[in-house]
Length: 189
Image 1: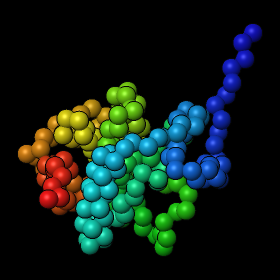
Image 2: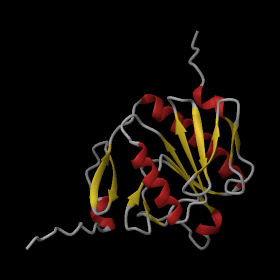
Image 3: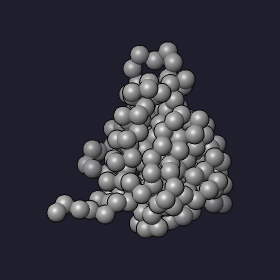
C-alpha cells in the first residue's frame, strides 16, 4: 500500500509570516516556491513599466497597481505574484483600504517579465491560472528578444516588437507605452 502525502494547505497567516529575507514566494499545488532574485535588467523593466502605470492609473482613478510582492489567490488555491498587477476600481468598490492579506482572484492585468531562471512551462502555467482566476489581459515581456507577448486568453494573441506600443485596451483604458522605452540603451555621458 502506498501512502501519498497531501499537499499542505497554507493559511494566509502562515504565508504572510514567512521570513522577510529578500526572497519572494509563491504557493503552487501546496508547495512553497521561492521566486528568486531576477537581476537588475528585470527589476528595471518592472519598476519602469510599473511606475508609468501607477501615474496613469492614479491620475485617472482607474484602480490600483501593485508590485511583485503582492500575492493573489487563484481558484486552484495557488498564490501567484505577477511582476506587476492592476486591479480595476470595479473590483475594489466598497473597500476603504486594500486588504492586508491576499486578493481573491487574479488581477485584471498581470505582467510577467521573463527572468533567466523561469522555463516557458512555468510562465505558461501562470498565464493559464491568471485567466482561470479572472485576468482579462496578460503581458509577458521578453528582455532577451526585446518583445512583449499579449494574451487575452491562455493562448498568445499577438507579439509586439520595439516599434509597437503596449496598449491597456479596455482593461487599463487609454494606457499606451512605446515598447522601445522598456529596452533603451543606457546613455549617461
